[in-house]
Length: 296
Length: 307
Image (tube, rainbow over the protein chains, first blue to last red):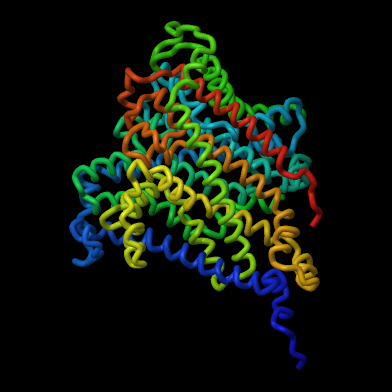
């Protein structure tokens, strides 16, 4: 049997992965080491915080994690005394409603804006793209004044309304890129078979567009879970606060009482949902985060 | 048929258009209008406003704190930008060339991006920079660098750079991901041909890889610019002192002018706010965005390469 060099057998990846020149190889090696250090730092960072949340504060100060085994005091304190779970459910409520609502409103609009020509289409597209570049604080004052005037600023649903209204441009622009790749023949055949336009969209296009809808929903979920400015302004009543805003108050009060275990337990509770989503759906997130690159 | 089409236009477009008008167009116009008025309190009704022309803008540029915040923003943009783009391009190149378990490392570098910024900031300020049990202290002590270990990272002297370091650490993952995907799209024959011709790795990178991913770099750079102009969260949460001049940025200065410096907006401070000036900051930031976009379009090459 004829023997081929190894890169011939794995031809897809080989030519790109060959590094040219001695200097190139040295730099590559250095880069690999740097990446390893970087990742070790990340793991140490997150791992330490998770372990610290199970360690009494006095051992944290000695930097002896888990010296007395698993200690749940941090979690019980923030749950019983600071009611962290009610903020957790607030966050879940706001995030889920915002994600669902955005798809409900933006998917049809994005579809119409990419697949149909009508007067004003270019204007819409340009306006939506421009609004992506707008600093969020620019919208803050008038929206707040408007909601105060409507006496809605202490209402639990307000934050969802704000999320829906301010989120439309990003979701629509993303979905517009996605709908551009969905073929229209199936939609037209549906029309010929007697579907209405609206019916054909929900029955034929939405199933085709599922991958794009799922991806943008994952990103919206992470984005709204992590959201801070709007939550700070529009969930001012303590009972309506989101987890991210509550965490900040928690951190301040934990610092004054010197309860570092509780502080780190709070941090863990805040980041666990997004990290779980990331671990479970990393493939989808990776392809979604690079959608711009692939579209090119 | 025609009727059904029009019904679809109406049903599909109207919610989004209404939301856009209410949440984007109206606030922007209103903010521009407010920037010409003296509005002391955010809950004051519009008949108490007093027209003052350009006074808010003149006042704004004479305030030391605003100029400091502007300088901070520029520093984040330039120093942070240089670090983020160089490191993420370098890492993307290394991982593109192949590395044992490359996917795992990529996922780990991206991980900080998905973690709630407030939690990430807490981790950095309370753990990494902690002067009793902090990660940096431990690392430097193990390496025997006692002077570095003794640095009080969160003190006013170092807080800005500490914040920038943490911010960049969390920003690299997203860029890395995009560049890796873009590099993967470059056909292997190009690298093959260059390799056979004996091009050095530096030449291959600057003559082949970089021009072919320039479009992606431009997009990422645009995002970075917008992110720096709206830089708010890190500046606000990182520093315990409200409107701390070491970490303040225009966006957080604007917030302070609108809502006061207390953490919760529930207790809207009646003193110290200057809503008209806050609006003026918003308008200035928008103008900066427009100028920045124009400059970005100018400096990045227009020609497209066929792959």
